[in-house]
Image (cartoon, rainbow, N blue to C red; front, side, top):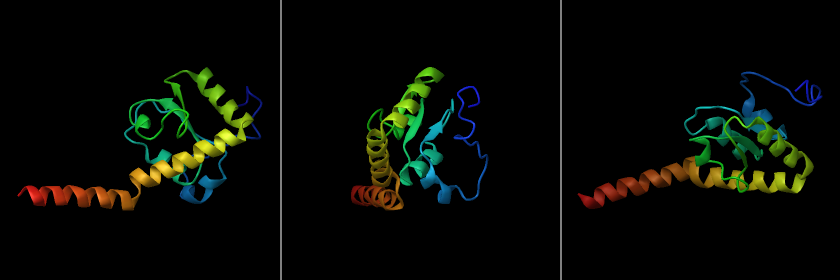
Length: 130
Protein backbone atom coordinates (compact mmCIF):
# COMPACT_ATOMS: atom_id res chain seq x y z
CA UNK A 1 0.00 0.00 0.00
CA UNK A 2 2.80 2.41 0.91
CA UNK A 3 4.76 1.43 -2.21
CA UNK A 4 1.74 2.32 -4.37
CA UNK A 5 1.17 5.61 -2.55
CA UNK A 6 -2.22 4.50 -1.24
CA UNK A 7 -1.60 4.88 2.49
CA UNK A 8 -4.42 7.40 2.88
CA UNK A 9 -6.85 5.43 0.74
CA UNK A 10 -6.48 1.85 2.03
CA UNK A 11 -7.19 0.62 5.53
CA UNK A 12 -6.33 -2.74 7.06
CA UNK A 13 -8.91 -2.93 9.81
CA UNK A 14 -8.37 -6.35 11.36
CA UNK A 15 -11.21 -8.18 13.13
CA UNK A 16 -14.37 -6.10 13.48
CA UNK A 17 -17.67 -6.84 15.22
CA UNK A 18 -19.39 -4.20 13.08
CA UNK A 19 -18.33 -5.56 9.68
CA UNK A 20 -21.88 -5.92 8.34
CA UNK A 21 -22.55 -2.26 9.09
CA UNK A 22 -19.39 -0.98 7.43
CA UNK A 23 -19.23 -3.32 4.40
CA UNK A 24 -21.54 -1.16 2.25
CA UNK A 25 -19.01 1.67 2.49
CA UNK A 26 -16.25 -0.42 0.86
CA UNK A 27 -15.14 0.43 -2.67
CA UNK A 28 -13.94 -3.13 -3.21
CA UNK A 29 -13.46 -6.31 -1.20
CA UNK A 30 -10.25 -8.22 -1.79
CA UNK A 31 -9.60 -11.81 -0.74
CA UNK A 32 -6.03 -13.07 -1.09
CA UNK A 33 -6.46 -16.40 0.67
CA UNK A 34 -4.72 -19.50 -0.55
CA UNK A 35 -7.18 -21.97 1.01
CA UNK A 36 -10.88 -21.51 1.71
CA UNK A 37 -14.15 -23.33 1.85
CA UNK A 38 -16.90 -21.15 0.45
CA UNK A 39 -15.84 -17.89 2.10
CA UNK A 40 -18.55 -16.38 4.26
CA UNK A 41 -16.75 -13.04 4.16
CA UNK A 42 -17.23 -12.94 0.37
CA UNK A 43 -20.91 -13.79 0.74
CA UNK A 44 -21.32 -10.98 3.26
CA UNK A 45 -19.52 -8.48 1.02
CA UNK A 46 -21.51 -9.56 -2.02
CA UNK A 47 -24.80 -9.31 -0.09
CA UNK A 48 -23.78 -5.77 0.92
CA UNK A 49 -23.36 -4.84 -2.75
CA UNK A 50 -19.56 -4.65 -2.70
CA UNK A 51 -17.55 -5.68 -5.77
CA UNK A 52 -15.15 -8.58 -5.22
CA UNK A 53 -11.63 -9.23 -6.43
CA UNK A 54 -9.93 -12.42 -5.34
CA UNK A 55 -7.50 -15.14 -6.23
CA UNK A 56 -9.14 -17.93 -8.20
CA UNK A 57 -9.00 -20.81 -5.71
CA UNK A 58 -11.41 -23.63 -4.88
CA UNK A 59 -14.32 -22.30 -2.83
CA UNK A 60 -14.01 -18.77 -4.18
CA UNK A 61 -14.92 -20.15 -7.59
CA UNK A 62 -18.30 -21.21 -6.14
CA UNK A 63 -19.17 -17.54 -5.65
CA UNK A 64 -17.23 -15.59 -8.22
CA UNK A 65 -17.52 -16.09 -11.94
CA UNK A 66 -14.84 -13.93 -13.52
CA UNK A 67 -16.26 -10.76 -15.06
CA UNK A 68 -19.80 -11.84 -14.11
CA UNK A 69 -20.00 -11.63 -10.30
CA UNK A 70 -16.52 -10.26 -9.59
CA UNK A 71 -12.96 -10.31 -10.84
CA UNK A 72 -10.50 -13.16 -10.36
CA UNK A 73 -6.77 -13.47 -10.70
CA UNK A 74 -4.69 -16.60 -10.93
CA UNK A 75 -3.45 -17.60 -7.47
CA UNK A 76 -0.39 -15.63 -6.39
CA UNK A 77 -0.50 -13.40 -9.48
CA UNK A 78 -0.41 -10.16 -7.53
CA UNK A 79 0.26 -8.11 -10.67
CA UNK A 80 -2.99 -9.32 -12.23
CA UNK A 81 -4.87 -8.78 -8.98
CA UNK A 82 -3.59 -5.19 -8.90
CA UNK A 83 -4.69 -4.73 -12.51
CA UNK A 84 -8.17 -5.92 -11.53
CA UNK A 85 -8.31 -3.27 -8.78
CA UNK A 86 -7.26 -0.61 -11.27
CA UNK A 87 -9.99 -1.74 -13.68
CA UNK A 88 -12.58 -1.22 -10.96
CA UNK A 89 -11.07 2.12 -10.00
CA UNK A 90 -11.17 3.30 -13.62
CA UNK A 91 -14.56 1.82 -14.53
CA UNK A 92 -17.30 2.70 -12.05
CA UNK A 93 -19.94 1.20 -14.33
CA UNK A 94 -18.17 -2.18 -14.38
CA UNK A 95 -17.76 -2.08 -10.60
CA UNK A 96 -21.47 -1.33 -10.17
CA UNK A 97 -22.52 -4.09 -12.60
CA UNK A 98 -20.32 -6.72 -10.93
CA UNK A 99 -21.49 -5.68 -7.46
CA UNK A 100 -25.16 -5.90 -8.48
CA UNK A 101 -24.68 -9.29 -10.15
CA UNK A 102 -22.76 -10.58 -7.15
CA UNK A 103 -25.47 -9.46 -4.76
CA UNK A 104 -28.16 -11.09 -6.87
CA UNK A 105 -26.15 -14.33 -7.10
CA UNK A 106 -25.50 -14.65 -3.37
CA UNK A 107 -29.13 -13.93 -2.48
CA UNK A 108 -30.39 -16.40 -5.09
CA UNK A 109 -28.08 -19.24 -4.05
CA UNK A 110 -27.05 -18.69 -0.43
CA UNK A 111 -29.79 -16.72 1.35
CA UNK A 112 -31.76 -18.29 4.19
CA UNK A 113 -34.73 -18.50 1.81
CA UNK A 114 -32.67 -20.29 -0.85
CA UNK A 115 -31.27 -22.73 1.68
CA UNK A 116 -34.72 -23.41 3.16
CA UNK A 117 -36.06 -24.09 -0.33
CA UNK A 118 -33.18 -26.49 -1.07
CA UNK A 119 -33.72 -28.36 2.20
CA UNK A 120 -37.44 -28.54 1.53
CA UNK A 121 -36.80 -30.01 -1.92
CA UNK A 122 -34.37 -32.53 -0.43
CA UNK A 123 -36.81 -33.61 2.27
CA UNK A 124 -39.66 -33.90 -0.24
CA UNK A 125 -37.43 -36.05 -2.45
CA UNK A 126 -36.59 -38.32 0.48
CA UNK A 127 -40.23 -38.61 1.54
CA UNK A 128 -41.51 -39.42 -1.94
CA UNK A 129 -38.88 -42.15 -2.41
CA UNK A 130 -39.96 -43.95 0.79
